[in-house]
Image (cartoon, rainbow, N blue to C red; front, side, top):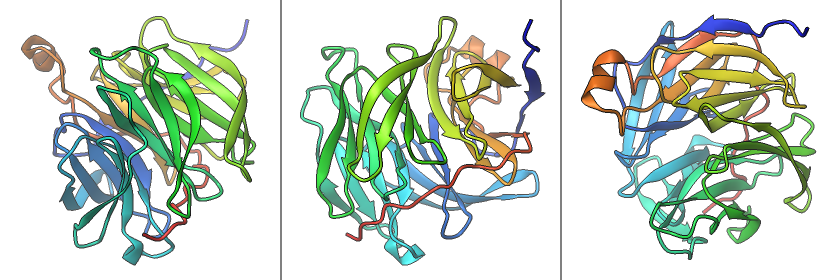
Length: 298
């Protein structure tokens, strides 16, 4: 029999309880932590100080915000966000400027995203319950500001990451409850040869990150846990949480940071899991794969 997966426990490190915390990323320019609250329509900047996440600044985006990435090589480049129906740039002073709107399907908004090794910002769309179920896509904001379509036929484009070598892309479709691996061409930004790595039956896969060993950490919505998988989809480790809805993950100096949600939980569920919405952490002693910025300049 294969060995049982190693299990760790996560503990809260933020004072704030977010409605739908999502998309934690380390800013490679500063080492800061970036994340969003989709429901509150905010971008947050912070840092891990000891055993607590300290918020440094917050920016009101004014529309549901699914993902953020640094823009350019310096902090003066600001950030790009996948929000509403497209991509937007936000300056360090909080000025928001639209860049492109790739989403044309009705009742569809942008969701999770990540930068590829070439400096493209890839982000997918989420199809609401009122729309045809497979009209979502995965889109790339190219360094020149144009947008290309990477994948179509998605229900809820979610967790996204790349192998340290750059030749594989990992992507979650939460509506299908699948984690897939694609062959990825960094030069052209194309994803081909899809392969289902993991099918989930007792929880919904959400955000993910890739570590320096090429393994994947996947947050399981309504699963009370984050699981680590090797590149072939074998479960290697698990981090348990005292809240049901972990949403996304990132690695920072050997610590796994986990955003969570309280949106949609009943009063009884919130009484049973009062820390829902806080950011959590667990020591996992593995480094992150590189996090990159969008290499365009608005």
